[in-house]
Length: 188
Image 1 (cartoon, rainbow, N blue to C red):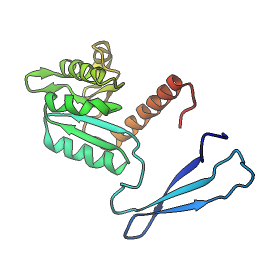
Image 2: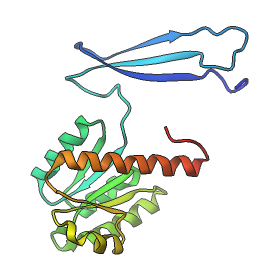
Image 3: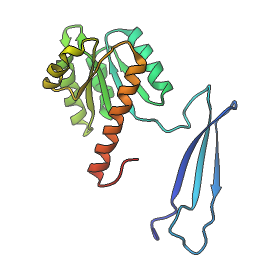
Image 4: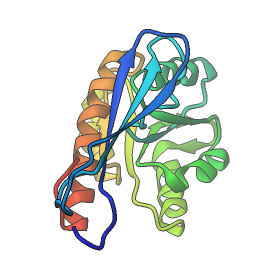
């Protein structure tokens, strides 16, 4: 690691206190050791903003129901995701450019979920972004049909945000493995 510069290890810790803060600890390795030279520990208030914590990933949710968007956003943000929501495909096309996963309602006004997914896939590719596209539905019997239409997968049990969170966590493991494989490294 010589010549690369200091190596930094970043840790995040949950603390019960009123304000987020950052503490730096220098490990002070002597003689040009090939090891970590400093540790950055981020503390955050368990009941407040999670700005100090690294995001688990950026998610786009496209649905024509604002109450569904609000409930899904709240659950996923509490779980540590950065969430963009959209009521229209046009707004979703602006947000998908840096998302890792897009969750799409099939029944949108004037457009099917498949058509929306195809438009979002084009917008993502135009931004040189690799996004995975998942349908969010209450009808698991058509999952194979939706995958055949081009979705990367289907999140069933629409409305059950706990199930959505678990399904999304599995998807994000696949995203990290795919990114690590493309980069020639190991997943984080």
